[in-house]
Image 1 (tube, rainbow, N blue to C red):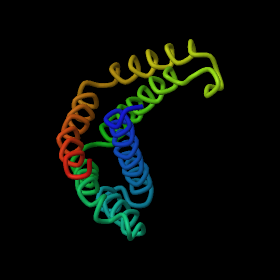
Image 2: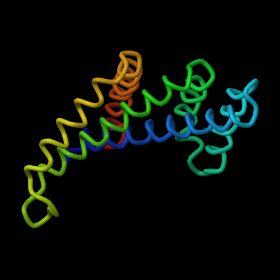
Image 3: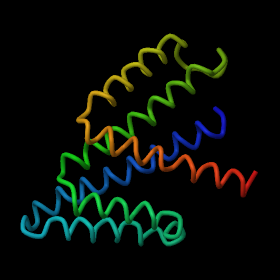
Length: 153
């Protein structure tokens, strides 16, 4: 897998997982106190990132985006956004699996094709808002990747 596609897969995975954590935090917030669930969820996400002391600088920007999504969007939007980015990650994983040699693969190459098509079909049949937000975040990350590639060839 080339550097760009590896980066896209990693970005999709990280963003999807952060959105998943936000959705779970929001769900627990509704169980604990329905009146202030979004504030509890935002606090939980901030605490989750703060526990990873060495990763705070790298994830601070993503955390701000996720906290904004939790505070401004409803739970369905967070789940859809998370689902879209994770499905894109799995689509890239299937592309990568297709490129493996016969000795490197566990299953036949033919299994990667329906896996890729299934991931893309599921990703793009999500609500339009989920696809739009997920696509915007992924597209916004491309300039970041290109700048990092220039700085660290």
